[in-house]
Length: 224
Image (cartoon, rainbow, N blue to C red; front, side, top):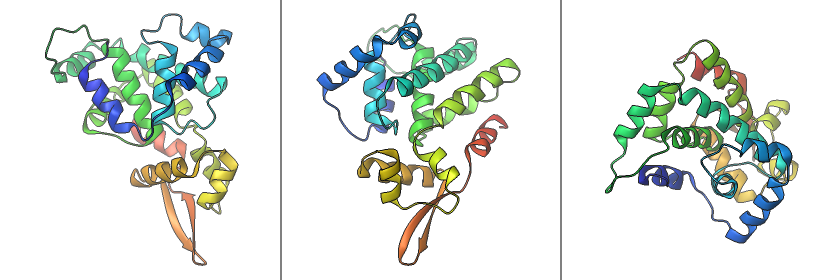
């Protein structure tokens, strides 16, 4: 069972609701994929729970098996590093104020909060604290964290704008990514707030451009 704090943190990153039957249909199809089935084999969370968070909180674009598998890979990498960090887990558990005794799957919850924060571009105070502690790692752990961030930042929007140096309008991003207009507008605003993108007014129109590419974003976190 998820802690109340985890539910609150994920709730703050949720920007739309999805139909439960649609999520179950996607999960059923995804679970027939051998790679996804393997990634879920030792998971503390059901596949439909992962997909629901992806669909409601992130700019994943098409909910296909490749995107789902990539998220599960990133989450697994984060969990493996977190599970080795007793101090981080104790910090997280100490921040939880439950009304009743509850076994908290701390590593799973931390990984999901961190992964979702990078996908959404929304870092709450809790997420900032967790990321700050987690990304002080060195050695092999830092390599695993880099791999996870490479996956998480390869969403439909950032790679597209890296390629299009001249920038793109919102309509062009929608057409290229097959994302819905409200979703694209929402995440452009989030990424602009993080300093990853910038908006320029050109000929009475607006174009979005990369301000900080993914390599610089990653280095910024890993060098802290």
